[in-house]
Image 1 (cartoon, protein in one colour):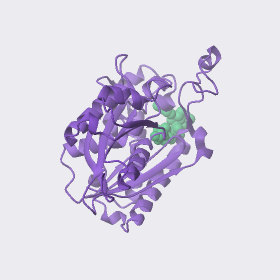
Image 2 (tube, rainbow, N blue to C red):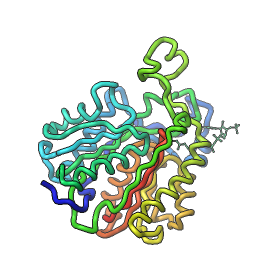
Image 3 (cartoon, rainbow, N blue to C red):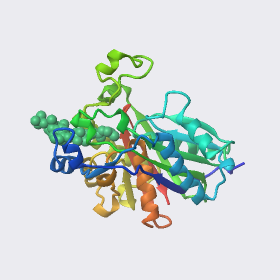
Length: 329
Ligand code: UT7
């Protein structure tokens, strides 16, 4: 049984589809321009799954890397959480499909739907089981393949999103390290700022729902923008206060990659230098719940973090949901 105490990330992994869609590719599909997309969002290209790739497949590929780096055998995994809003199919959960392919035969497996905040929600949930000694470890995967549910006729949304997966293994770490504070928030009153009305049990697939394009993402971009700049700053401050820290103590901020203008605004308000704020939106767009674990895995691979560095991870998304974590590397 794991000891009660600190819980941290002991390994990371990521997987991205091979297919790239550039801004100029999008100019062929909707009335937009490379210039508009770059200046308004910071995105230059995104990765999009092909017909042979799936949400669960990307999740498996990211998880395999994280397990290998943690030197953890599949049968040793106690808990598998897949944070996603784009499971391969309604039933069973994506996590059960992933569990079968990884052969994590002793793991409890469930999906967690909290939009782009799903990965941070997943880490927070998994941490509780390890901290209280019920489980020894957890594999948390953030994965989304939004491209099949994006309306490729809607320039307000189709230029923003990309597909991808990131994974971490959580396990006990020495006291004073790992996750120092986390907080999850939600406000369902704002559900209709970012939603997919069709394809669920209320409006199941029917000819009329397809005709009305109800199976595609609908989004009020400017309202989410206003919300995002506030909650990124406030929730980062909130979790820092929870562990008696200030933005000045931070070494790195890992913000959800939704829009470079949102990220820059938050960084300025928190008084952070450009090099302290990790960014990869130009290459992947907004990969929803995969955005933070992909960012994390790239940073680990680049050797960005030193032992003892203080990181803040912060996200927002459909729900609306938002949240943040502070982590001592
Ligand atoms: O994970 C959470 C997911 N969602 C978000 O994070 C979304 C947050 N919001 C945003 O990132 C921004 O609001 C957007 C990038 C979506 C839009 O940028 P904006 O600066 O808020 O633009 P806007 O929606 O106010 O639109 C300004 C103009 C409009 O034209 P008019 O009415 O001024 O003539 C839009 O029709 O830009 C037009 N526009 C575009 N033009 C070229 C909107 N999308 C495009 C486009 N290409 N792709």
